[in-house]
Amino acid sequence: MKRLLIMAFVAAAMLLTACDPTCTEELVVKNMSGHDVVVTRYHTVHPGGWNDWQPIEDSVRTDVETLKDGGETKFIEDHLGVTGRRGIELTMGYRYWQDSVRLEFDDGTTRLFRPDCDTAWGPYAFGSDSYTYEDRSNRGLPFYGEILWARLTYTLTKEDYERASEIVPSENRRR
Image (cartoon, rainbow, N blue to C red; front, top):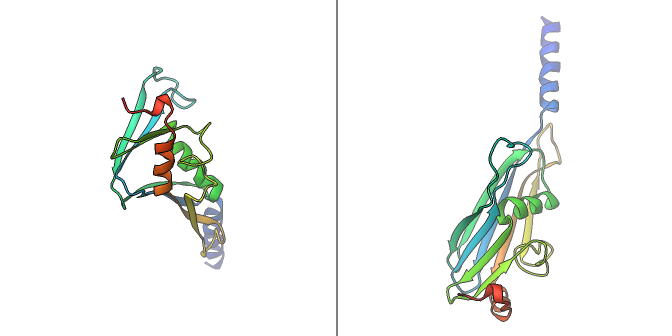
């Protein structure tokens, strides 16, 4: 009986240490710009390594959301593994903001952002003051000290609105 109990304990310990943990990443966007803003996120749909049986789509899909002044939205991503500042930034960039983002304020001021050219300010400027990061280290076993919960918050400010109204390339003018 004692031997069976030891074997059950060893099996349980192996299962606990062999599994990947589940982590939660909260992606929050706050609007403190003084204006209501429509956030349009664009992403191209095409086949990848896991879905080669699907036809290629050249279409661009959009996700549109209106954020009232003072409001916020939250996107929660759960997955296996652990997280951290760099990991949640990748999730925010590729899963939330995606290919490009268009901000349209209630007075018609618009700004289009792309990840490869807009890194000084805006949604893809992860090193800017517009982003705040929080996390909690796991206190329990078996993943003691690993970050299993994190939140990355992007805050759209009055300064962002002013910058958007100053920059008026032809692609950003309201038609």
